[in-house]
Image (cartoon, rainbow, N blue to C red; front, side, top):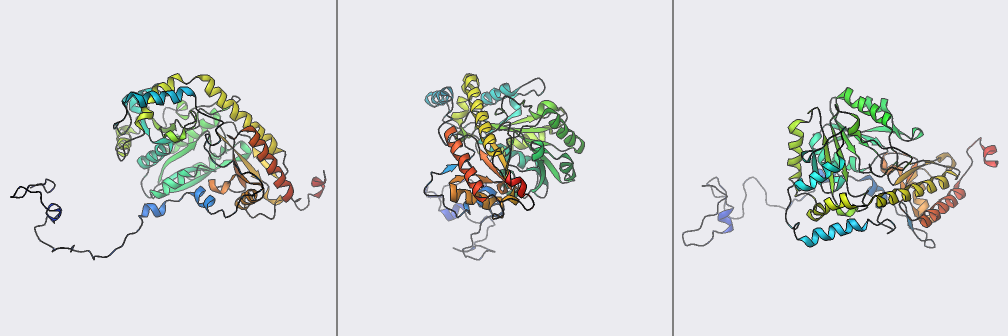
Length: 454
């Protein structure tokens, strides 16, 4: 008899719980006893939970300082463009959600990888002759973060390693190490607008390397790689036969004085999983709709990686169905003026912030060309009372009520990250306070008094 089929007892009543969940060996172990197990409480967290570590949360949550009570707090630390209300999404986007909700068509379960019609829309939106896409090449996810998680899970096993940028988005390490995957950090070069140190990158690759993560445009750097640099990255991947996980969530947030190239457009022999989502371009990070675009024109991934992504998607039941229902209208009806206005604001804010901070002795900002951030170098020799970028940013909060993330959050040192989505008046005030803070704590380095006297 199938043990999972519930049978009626002879008197027509349902069996007891003990009958249904009895031991199927045919032997009775007696009430309240389980063979091979001592009856005692022993509930412990899993290995995965113990391995899960978010550097940003660990650093920020351990900051014990309180803001200056005489100054209003200005947070330049949160990568959420909606926080201050100055960057709302377009009314067409909101209306698309209302229509989808009112239709009543999207209240049930969707396929784990997303509705076919929604995947067709994404494929059409990002299709180009150099990197063609069909619905079968699209997996919808609960935000770009889950897209990255699924890509790591399908490409790497415990004991293998992945290559991650430094400085880089902390989630890569958080996800990988929780899965038992080693993280190897390759260097980005601030003096070259955060280009990859290609020699260092290639030196890290070994027989256990499962994939290379390329984040372009970059969080936290705001950098955008040139076509020639991307081609050099692809050459390394092709030479070493390492697939690429391309985190391209900011692909549509590139300033007008810079040209963006999707990685998949430049190669037909390196298999690429490209991750994106609605969060940034449409300014709706809380709606949690992301995607994976599978680029595999040489059939290197084959059916196995595609099937693996589908199976992993089936662990949960996919992204919000209402957002999927609104997707067609969002992609087709959002006016170009909305995109233009968003990018114009971000570029203006980036330029304002860069100019203001570049004029402050002891700081070395690196000009951004996209995304929502810029990184600012701290010439620590001029601030000897601070032992690290963490202490620098803590004191900035305590004295000036300006909160920036220290670069230690991104596996780097002696920098801090500024979010450029805040309103202009607030950005000006924040830069003024940072200037006052630096002027108060700046010291001439030994042997450079003449320069200070200037």
